Image (cartoon, rainbow, N blue to C red):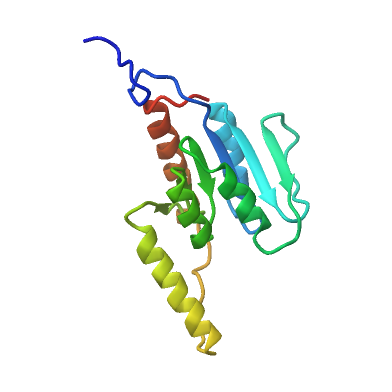
Length: 168
């Protein structure tokens, strides 16, 4: 069977995979660095204040201004097919999914086109309850199981993108 000549075929080389981290409250940065190093991927650590990062050529720290959505806007502007976005921010996840990026929460939950609507509705409901003074419990404490699930989800996203023709 001849190799695919279309731009979307499995034999067509695509751009490099990059990981974008919404870093302000991200508990899995060390895990991201380990996985990215193993796969030879570029990591962008985005925050609106200084965040310590390892001094590696493949890790780039991006400090944006302090406006509320500056980090989200920077990441969303670069979200494309072949990008992996790590965030717990559901509106940012939605923006990135619409742009074609793979989005993973720090607990390993993959945000997809089919799951983002419910995630947004749930987030909006709890936001409304909090604004009315109703007490909500907030997220569960981060656990070793969450860390393990995240590592699995990140590896799966990288493998899937590589099978789709993206490179390190």
